[in-house]
Length: 82
Image (cartoon, rainbow, N blue to C red):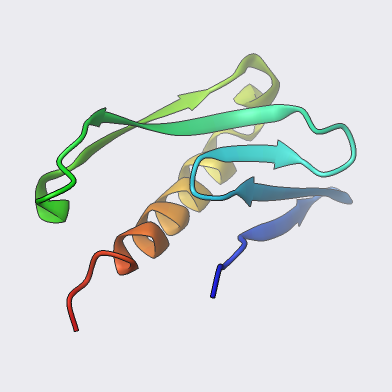
């Protein structure tokens, strides 16, 4: 099952596309992206990611950062061994 992180700020709806990009629903403008700065596919405990906030996302920096942490944590769940 795939999860989608959706939220609204001042009536504008946003969602994280996969675990990679924060997008405004209506305009499809990318506000932020997460990329692997140091890929460690074999060792999920020691991976380093990079959050890049675009000029369009600057006014929502706190919300972008908090939702990025949530998305990152959800992404880690795929690597947890049960």
